[in-house]
Length: 123
Length: 95
Image (cartoon, rainbow over all chains, first blue to last red; front, side, top):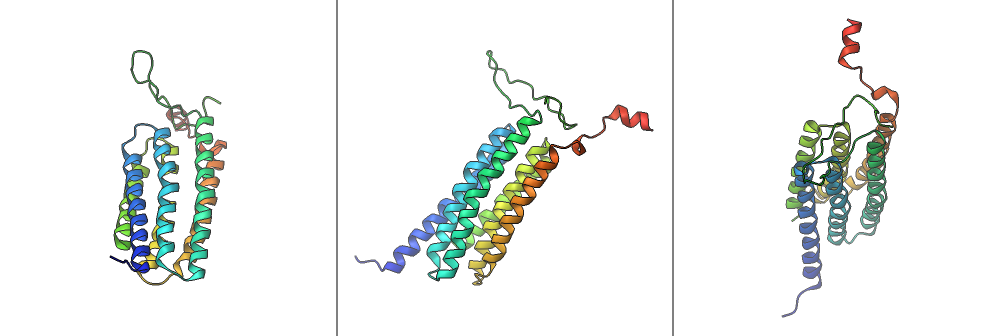
């Protein structure tokens, strides 16, 4: 049973797009369901990079034209550089301005998150 | 499969908008806007392939750059004193 090479490339592309879509949706559910700002940032930061990478690789396999592939590689590199930088700056600004994560104390109770949007209180 | 990925990206953009509206703190909103921008880049790339016009990739590149600059700009602004809102007591004093 011999497969055509185009069929195999198409199958790999569809697989990459499927994985990327799944990671996108899991990131969307994570940003809605997680209890805390930092856990939400974990969901977004992990899925943004890998989901964008998988979808862009899947698109690269769809089109054999050289210019399109070069543009997609540029978008992929930009995503891989920009997203961690933005996540790092966001976490640093949040912790600098006094937004504390929700933690468990020794009895297992959740600590109160007493952040007020009225400016930088703890710095 | 292209259309399925496009629909998934649209659904995730709607979820990010919901978090941006609901979000209890300022940084949740910035995070949601950042995610929305990333997903917009993906949506532009996918739509270029769905409609058979790969020229959309140029717009996607420009949008990625603008998204990064805007997020860093808003974060920079959140460190300054402009974000400190007057408390209700000071508002009462003004009135």
